[in-house]
Picture (cartoon, rainbow, N blue to C red):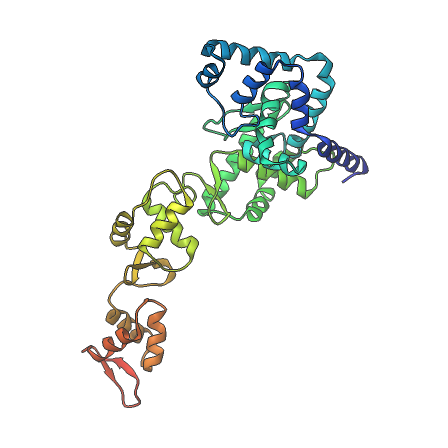
Length: 380
């Protein structure tokens, strides 16, 4: 990074550290009447846990809903047009715009708030204040884009090249599709930066970087912001990035939720535990009931019953069948084994008592004991 870039970066960090959204808003509110201030605060949840409806505020002041709407609109307009505070507003806007520029001019809303509050070391209750200033007080150089088929709710600067963002995301989608599975962030970024698309469009892509000499850190930060903004790509429970249309990334069906839960646990679980974990992870608002989960486990052969009500993934090496059948498979694969060796291998595939394994050896016409005390299959 050049000396000029470092100076600009330091200046940005100093300005950001000095930006206090609550103080800025309080200074603006000093120009409103008490009623105007209270209407705006309640409508935008500024200092309140949730937004109040027009009807709720109307009942509080014994006025109509339409009158509340008028007060809200006129008050916001008054705040935005306060000329004597224009310099202060513009300075606050520059701070927010500079933050967006650090991420290529585009940031998903939660990511935007997470970063700005982290920089400011501000409390979460400052989030609505930041959003109110950005959406209603700042100029069009900082604007909100509502969720659509391409993007999540996001914030952008006026100079952001949205078409370039779309092109980058489409290229990353192709890479993930070709791989056929979610990728770790560092692997995904490395693949992209080694792609022909990046080589051919590098100059255009780097125009989104905030400094004259973009570092690897700058590039990775911008790419991650693009990923978070997209509605085609999402992080899964394992912090890998995959296509939002994949069940393992955004589970919708109960079967997908069961599979992801077992993958996350990385061990066999009782069907009631699986139902509980699904509800704790809150993939959506639907409740998972244990009987429904059990039915899915029984009907799909990618799940294997390994104990009383306990299921594992077949891909882990578990095989279906009774304990006696499992013992037979083990002896077929390994040849004669001692009882303790058989016990050990069975317990790798089944959650059963030692006595159950012992009985399967004693009461099995297909297995015999050799002279040296080992067990083997009877020759057919």
